[in-house]
Length: 69
Image 1 (cartoon, rainbow, N blue to C red):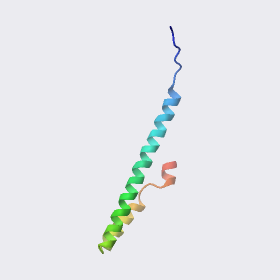
Image 2: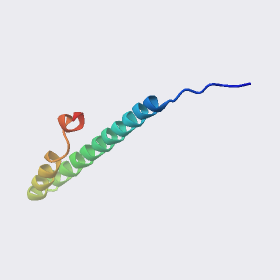
Image 3: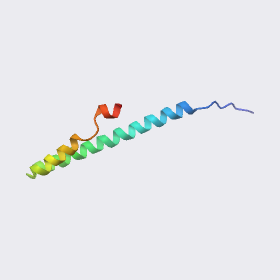
Image 4: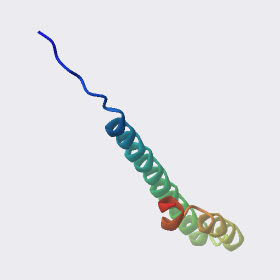
C-alpha cells in the first residue's frame, strides 16, 4: 500500500505563525494584568511615585497596533 503525502509546508507555517501570535497575546495580557494589580496595590499603600513609575512602564507595553504589525 502506498500513501501519497503532499507537502504540508504552508499549513505548518500558518500554524506556527498563529501559535506565535497567541503566545505574544497571552504574555501581553498577563503583563498588563500584573501591572494593573501592582499599580492598584501601590496606590492603596499610598506609594504614588512608585505607582506612577509602574504606570509609565505599563504604557510602554505593546499595543494592539504593535501586535498587528
